[in-house]
Length: 118
Image 1 (cartoon, rainbow, N blue to C red):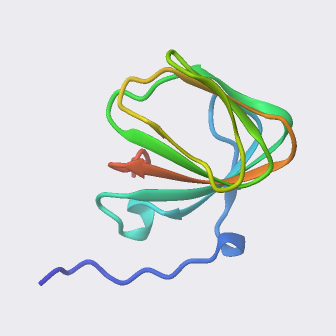
Image 2 (image 1 turned 45 degrees about the vertical axis):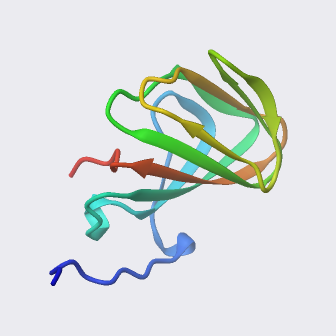
């Protein structure tokens, strides 16, 4: 039996923050270690037109993005593509990636294991 507690959260009730290495981007952490999650982090991200992330990679976790609204131009070492609502991208550990919003966009970000350190 787990002693982990059930978590209910609301996008509008969690604080917004701008992630490092990003411009025109606001994130809302819905689930992560600060909320009791040990293996998963879930974020709603919003990006203004021309906002984005500089080229970077993650050495100790995977990142996926599920596009909810707008259009994102995403580059990796292997791909250069436009992502629209309903599309999902997975950045494996070590995958260098860059993101630019072509219009106001909203997306779900999932990290496994969590990126957040508390």
